[in-house]
Length: 182
View 1: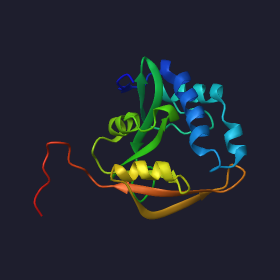
View 2: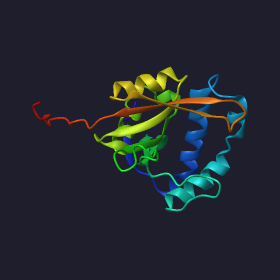
View 3: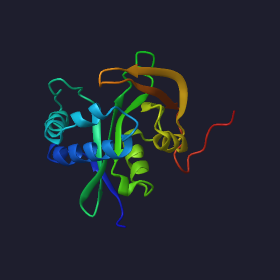
């Protein structure tokens, strides 16, 4: 398998990001979210929203989100991530938040997700929301220092409840950097 290249996303990447988003959502969430939600996913709508976001705009009826990165293998976008300031009031100004990280299933376990996570968050303190019933994602984030912090939420907008848990991690020293003695 070719090496992964991670770079900042550009507006020209919006259609590929949307395609990865829809494909990987369906791959990762089948059986874990209401079918009505997966049925609402639309590549064209997602592409227009990502194009606006990557131009620094807020798309109509969608969130602005933060910076975004794409992962390429053999010149094809196979994953993306997006992060910015924490949106939860109790964390605002303290940590970064991972807004999205999606990788096409054929590239799971190859380092693409880890590279995208590192590009989005570096080694700083961070938070993210994940479906409570997503053991693969929870294990991935756990491997990277994220643990549940006790905060949960329920989203009923999509034809059935989605239960999410917030995961957090503290600052992590970079490789070769030592932690202060305690």
